[in-house]
Amino acid sequence: MDNSINFIEILNEQLLAHSFQAVKDTNGNQISGLYIRMENPVLYILGISDQENETTAHILETFTKQKVGELEEIRCNHLVSLCIRLSEDDGEIQPPFYIDERIHAVNWRYSLEEKKVFVQKGQPDRLLGIEKLLLLASKGDMVQKPLEPAMKGGKPWVSMSIFGLCLLLLIYTTLSGKGGSTIRAFGLSRSGILEGEYYRFFTSMFLHSGIAHLVSNSIFLYYFGFKAECLLGRGRFLTLYLLSGLMGGIFSVVFHDVLAIGASGAIYGLLGAMLILTKKYGSKYTQMNYGTMLLLAFASISFGFLDMGVDNFAHIGGFLGGILVFLYYMKNHRKNG
Image (cartoon, rainbow, N blue to C red):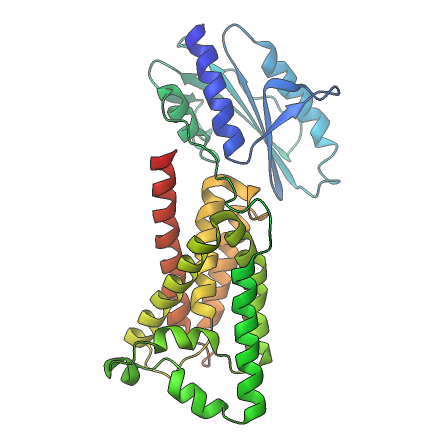
């Protein structure tokens, strides 16, 4: 009994750290063992009950039926209702309830002793990484603290400064008529790098060929850069941005021998970092679910191969660079947490 209560308390912390929200009653009190998570167009509802408290399963079914009528209002097409029963018995797992074809009801039995999920044949034993959170909670001493924004207030000055510098350089190169010579002197090229002009890896990040080029990069910088800077802090964000751009430049030099400019390598690094963040913690930080983020990344890189004027190898290198840097940040967070 005590072991089960301790497990549920730890699991509660894990779920709240990974974009699940506790369901509350009309008085604002948390309903024990009931959680919800929106990954549009799918709504997930999770209910956890132990051997001493069988009422959660009934509450989950009632709450699920209530939410079915709200799916259109919250713009969801499907609902997944997962009931996890903590039990050491080897008895049969209760069959899931059925409402209509939009509802996918799943029942798990989780053994605290064996640290294992048991399901009926044909039902999934993995869902949103919940099976991993169950294992972490059963070990007791592995609670992962949620990522807390490094900046509680203030504006994302680094992102804004990057945009401002890129805009000023674009205005200068356009009005001065020295665009071509500036790009040749500071753009990224294999010949320049081989001659020891390593500054090109960084100067090329702030040059753009035109307003459309700058706007396309700035949209990503605004959406992902502002969020990443507030989460990571200015120093770590700038490091992520520059290292992603550097990785994109290395890929460009190695695989695509052209004179290249633009911040897209660094921008794709932000996309890669936010993709990993969303996979780990859900839509809590980016307001986009993992499926949408993955589709965005795939489509952006794929379309890059269709445009001969795009240095897509810089995109790929920056994307991978952002993932690697962010994974390093995550590793340090786990150590300190």
